[in-house]
Length: 295
Image 1: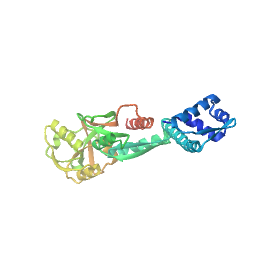
Image 2: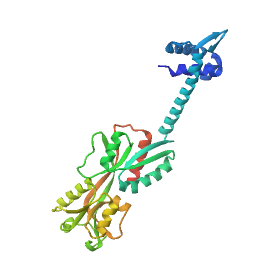
Image 3: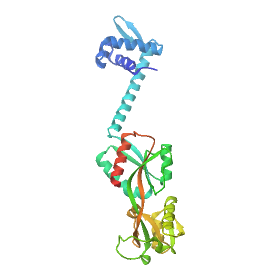
Image 4: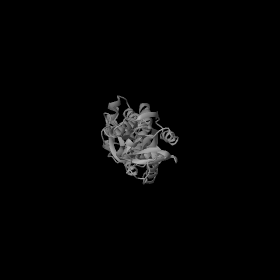
């Protein structure tokens, strides 16, 4: 293995022509440069230098190593500069997975705030539901994720989540089934025990079943869709009622539905990472922005 300091001495000698000039350029004493050059020859097993009079000149092997050495040192300098820029948040790219309603609401706000605070950082977005996002994190395809969990749902092994927002759930009904009263008046799900229901993803379906069980009935599921726009359209057409979280309603609200809050019902919005900290500075910066816009 070639020592970088010894390679620097050879490159400096090749560039400046003398040991004294190389020493001055690298801020070393001449004996130190001579020592590095001797050790470099010993490490490589090659004759790199030839004494001519009172000076030194590079052999053909020395010339070749010096030329390649300059390229290696330039690449190392570039890598160091890129790492410095990333650590100081002057540059970098962070890969984020987010579920659809978060991608439509929280992510745009996060991108705007990130551009204001750290204009050198870029964000690549992949849309993914929480189980898929966890798989992407484990595979190293993304750096962090916005996920959600309902009560009783836990993270998979190796994945760590930090709660950033309580996303309240609401019953969504067509106008003709609206129980009336103030807009923020909570609703009793038991009133809709005999109604058809529309459900969403597997996690959302599980929470819907749990909420209805608490209200004393088992819902009659008529339709299922992961698309919250389609779900609202089904409800607006009088084909059933549903439960949707606040972010989904913020992303899109069909004018032909009415939303009534369900007391105590919410899902937790989380910033999720994989592996133990510390994480790269750019990832921490994006996580902090996501937490701020979610709060």
